[in-house]
Image 1: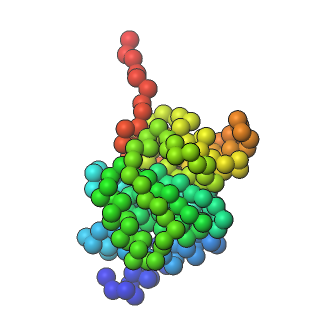
Image 2 (image 1 turned 180 degrees about the vertical axis):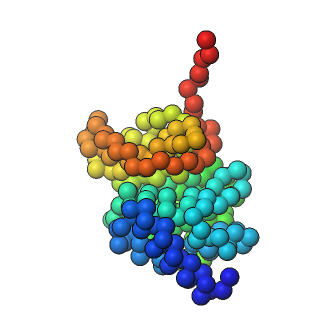
Image 3 (image 1 turned 135 degrees about the horizontal axis):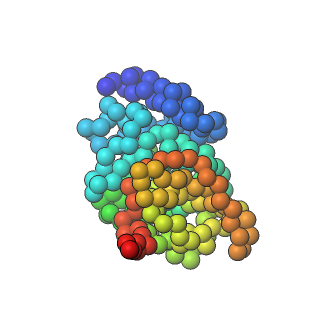
Length: 220
């Protein structure tokens, strides 16, 4: 696919997928139309980089569909002065989007090879306000910091509060909860030191975070 065709595919993605899934924030739309998603996928998937698909990644993981990434970006609404935490770096594309909207992104992934490739892609686009960190964040990421926005890109079979306390007051947390085939995307906002509000945004399905905790089930 030529550069011109990829540019048209990116435009079509925004108009036919992103907008029609109620993503209307001009900042998000401009970002998704301007940032080349095809540069963040493996070469063999480049021709379908803008399709309404979850693209396969190594280790049984997936790159989320463009419309879901758009909804996450709109829901979190990161500002240029804000600190963002991303759980699950994956391809690095959503990382790049979050970095383009915020002051700084800390992105955590359990797979070092994901981080290595993401760093190469971010550097190629002169995106420098990102810290990539290897670690297991299935139960939360306790680095002593608070964040204005947190995106958890893998699902949690059971909702837990491991990320809630890493939010600033007014901070927003997006996560996906459920055990399939249909999962619920939630936006959780910290409204006080010991109080959070929860809004159900959408139904979707993504792989669970590695080592995500599932409560034991008993058959009688």
